[in-house]
Length: 234
Figure 1 (tube, rainbow, N blue to C red):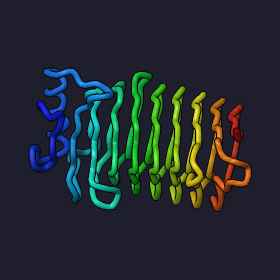
Figure 2 (cartoon, rainbow, N blue to C red):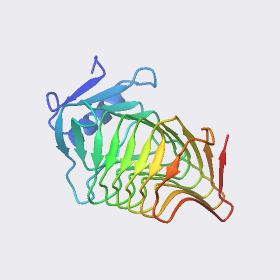
Figure 3 (cartoon, rainbow, N blue to C red):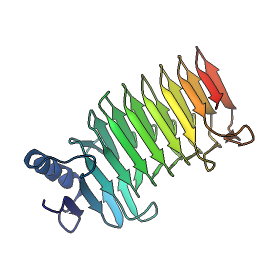
């Protein structure tokens, strides 16, 4: 507790039990964005048990840190609702029965760093109800739904992320969502529906030069706008 650190499996046998312990710690000590509690997850495959295979993150100012995108795998998803400054770093997240990361609530603020979210039954990253998320150097690939979905009043920033080979649209923004794409390594391709889809007054802004091939090789179209949705370059 004094080190702001929980180790899995050395100090706590499972990620689920580590989250329960983190809740207890957060009731005894005040963590902050600058001084968060870290759950450090070792190499290997870590199972999230239960019907939905979804783990609820129940406290703010917490970081889940693995050993690398090819080293630490979470077999299950994460759900964050109205928690602030939650970070996922250096992980593979795969959920065969649901979403990879389900983020919701106007108080939710999440950062995803150097993660792969892959082979989920639904969307890889699903944000709704005013959540704010930043993903940097991540891959959202091979999911059954969208790679990344931003819904009602959400704010999403993707930095140098790759979104490809998903069962539906690569990046879908809807219902007044705002999405900003940054980084020359950003690439949205080979998705079974659209590459980029802005609908219902959502706005996707591509902060890259016109020569950058941001979205390409998608099955139906590389870019589509519907019902007041907007895609623009700045």
